[in-house]
Image (cartoon, rainbow, N blue to C red; front, side, top):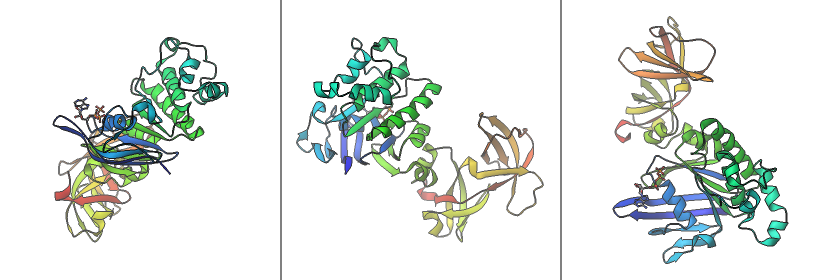
Amino acid sequence: MTALDVTAAGKAYGPVAALAGAHLSVPEGALVAVLGPSGCGKTTLLRCVAGLERLDAGEIRVAGALVAGPRVHLPAHRRRVALVPQEGALFPHLSVADNVGYGLDRAARRSGRVDEVLALVGLADHHRRMPHQLSGGQQQRVALARALAPRPPLILLDEPFSALDAGLRAELRQDVRAALRADGATAVLVTHDQGEALSLADHVVVMRGGTVVQDGAPADVYAAPADPWVARFVGDAMLLAGTVTGGRARTAAGEAPVVGAGAAGDPGAVTVLVRPEQLRLTPAGDTAPGGITGRVLRHDFHGHDSVTVVGLDDGTRVLSRRLNDGARDEPGTAVTLRIEGPVRAWAADAAR
Ligand SMILES: Nc1ncnc2c1ncn2[C@@H]1O[C@H](COP(=O)(O)OP(=O)(O)OP(=O)(O)O)[C@@H](O)[C@H]1O
């Protein structure tokens, strides 16, 4: 069964179409990330699912039950959907245990469920604390425990890590994922952070302009983006002008086999996607066939990896990413580059 089905959802605020026919399907037990730039309608979608906004068109089903549709608008408290907001979800005058047990009936409170979910989020010893005695990360853990406690068919997470600093965010992400998994929960996470979406979710749903433009496993969305816009939004992307003949793309940075729609297309002008980790650099003078020469413009050290910016003879700038091996590519050094593995391509006039 699906935990959530959103069909052709529409919602306008005056002249602004925040949702313009959005579709979304979330299988039971999945963690789905809704990813998109600011203003694409993510929060509106979440608020419509939660019952905080009324749909203008389309319908929403939670665990098969119609909660929003033509002439149907179930109030939020009758939807069996839990919402974890960005911050400030806890009742300040209630202890951690009372916050978590708030929505539970007496039998459930006595069953040990509060202890169980607090243990799941790593706060087994914090029952008696008050919210102001907790760090921001701990408060978000309690908010998640409270959402999990009544075992709702669906949990919505609205950028739940955005108020935290980077180190804490990374740790909390993985703990939240583990807690959701351990409890068999189904969740939809809204984020504009592509790293967060790719590392956390089973499915990534990419939104643009109030609609869903792609839905798939993180690796598939990254490797086979629906269009150049998605390619750029999900990861670093070089979009190079090229031509395709015989299933191979030729670009200023070298040539490579083409996969996907572009592979079967007529010969002609294309836009080619090359990810920086696909561009291999070797020292200048490498005479193996297919090498393109360039000159190092910059070397950016990122700790676990580094990115070298290379200028080609025709003025094109390309990026090459590799794991750090301690070596530095000094600016001005001549290098040979090659594209490794297949690339995606779109007809140049269709590329955005
Ligand atoms: N209450 C409102 N009144 C008027 N316009 C609104 C309202 N809420 C959202 N909008 C508009 O609807 C569009 C979608 O907004 P929404 O908040 O859903 O986007 P978002 O993808 O969640 O963005 P962000 O990541 O910045 O939160 C935007 O153009 C926004 O300005």
